[in-house]
Image (cartoon, rainbow, N blue to C red):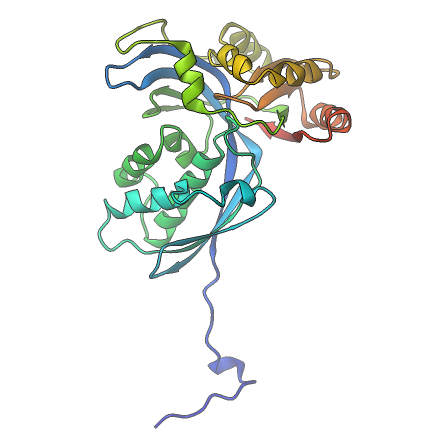
Length: 302
């Protein structure tokens, strides 16, 4: 016999399961060498990757239907995307895991898009970590890595979101212990298409143009010396496509106590390294005051 539940009886009220939550930290390419182009068209890279203290946030409410809700200050930039990388990653994992529990994702979008800091890839990596938790999968499950690589070349590194050397087209990941730096990330709110930057390199399939190098062990001094020898090979063509990068570079180089200024990924975000977070915070205030239309964040890398 059905017995009505008293509205104020907390012991008999249904309990909602809290959503699962993950951060999706920005990926920063401290160095990025293009060492060749494969016969399948992918470029071979060697990149020292660090992750920042700033990023997007993602929640998952496990349920029977896969869906994505956008929020946050940059959500409008994704409104027209029918195949967001969060959904693509979930579908790629679902194709490899029969009966995968998915549900409703809520993406708090804070990172600029098409910015060279892996915002979409970081979101996809966070989605895979959430799905692993919802389905009692270990993060070392090879199906997670396979789904990550199928989603995008930067997603395997973002799946772990730990400092690493990323090689190949993104499928070779070697964990690295990197010293911590204060950093300022600056994006002039100008998107740069990754495909256009790689096309400007003009490499034909089968071309080889260099060999990857490993950073030496040590602290900030040793890593800075290495980075000054190992630039971002995509920066020159990106500057042609987005001349405003020259202004960003000049603004960061003028900051006191700056140790290194470089572009991340295929642009158009540039970063500056400082000894600590205090120097980075001071520089960020100066740059933001002079260029209020830019996206400027102080953070920690390492």
